[in-house]
Length: 133
Image 1 (cartoon, rainbow, N blue to C red):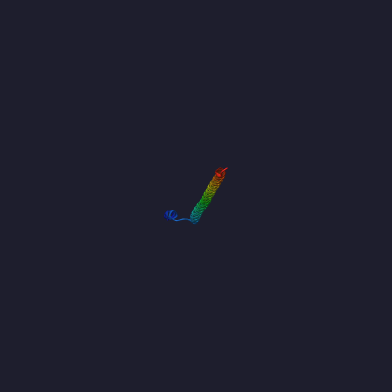
Image 2 (spheres, rainbow, N blue to C red):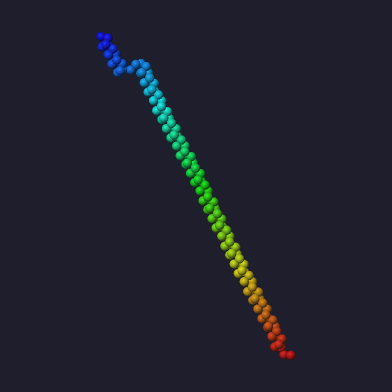
């Protein structure tokens, strides 16, 4: 009897868990769950960091775009200034041309008056010669 009882007890012991084993198993399961939760939290933190990095990159891109837009605007302003300067130069050239034309007109007028005076002098010179002495 003793032998059978001992065999039965050993068989029972090998297939069942003691309260201590159950506690250790439960504690190990809880620890594994806590570790899984810590890993999930680390993954969430990595994802948040990736998102922050993506946002920083988007902000850097916005800054670069504003800089490019500012440069394009400055280039457009320089182009407008060059165009205004070209227009002023064309205006000055037209004014110089008008002034040259006025000067030519004055010169023609002087020549005309000079020719008129010469003709008048010639007429005056001729007249005394025509008179009988």
